Length: 521
Image: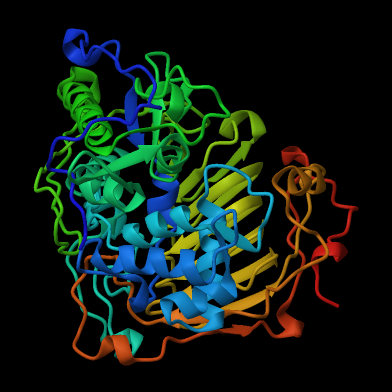
């Protein structure tokens, strides 16, 4: 039977000294909790067997099964163990393992296996559903450059592209503020289950209790992160008062799971208060615009709901179209123009290119993550992405990218020139996609690739994997039977149509160099 945390437990004798519980009013001395958006944006997979709707009942069973049958002494499991433990194909297991590795908050020494606790958290988050896209902030202006009938109006269709549902207004990716609000609301609602699935059962006085070791607590770094008032990151063990005085080697020290849960919920509440205050600030601009709780129904989860988030700071070449928030750089709404972002502009932040039309966007920098969303009739050059690149809801766009991984979602008539270490993942209602080898160069390219760990010798541009027609995380209505429809894959570009793309010299490109290392023989 699954244990819950709605009871009194006491820490074991080996637990560190506990705090008095006193906090400054307004949470000024309390670190600010934020969700790790990388997990929510790049870690969701459309594999039905990964989504459990019975809370943690099945997950606890899966965890115990993996630990007993497949895990090593270090509690790690490989793709073969994943396939058997989750009853999925070996190909899907490989995708799960690789995707989890790409969103971990640390660089694992072993890329062929994962910690079972990280895996269980990863599986739980597969129940998350993204915030529904909203009407574009400038629908009238966007209507002038976007087709009136498109695959990107919030509907998927099993019909031909010309039969797609007409929509009177453009849709756009939710703002960073709204997304973080939705993610925090999800975490608050499900935090009890999340802590429970990490906790260990121990013999108490007359009854079982749940405790959380320091090592297990630090696994929450996959989901959350903490910042001080100066927006500097704080290690999880130092942010939590129960573990703040622990030695780094004291990984087995444990604390009452219910007390850790109370502290985490309090941390979320303080973050909500902070973000609501920021949302009401005169400098905030428009409000959050309504946040719907659309995650999959789960059992045994707390019912708390909240809405939130913070404002971004404007900077970059095109203000206010280019924005740097606390942890990402956004290029938004560029039309009939060229934009270049280099290392000094991105500061290794994740980058998002949103709603750009008839433009050329150059991101000539080493990145961890990147997203291209809602663009049309544009060319986007992405320098080097060490974790994951996601391209979604784009039409007649050329993507030129060196990356470890790419996921292509709901795109049409796009061409992808790729230097890619893992097979491209293709998902959703795609039409007339083409793939080709990488076709450009700039002087710092090889250095940037080396910095983020891209192997210039391995290029799997022509090995796309089709995952399915429906993304269960997108919160959109899907026609009956669509999930059983085979998604359209990408075809290889005709060699006669392949050309090199030259980055202008005034952007620092050296046109003499070759990209042979990234091209397939």
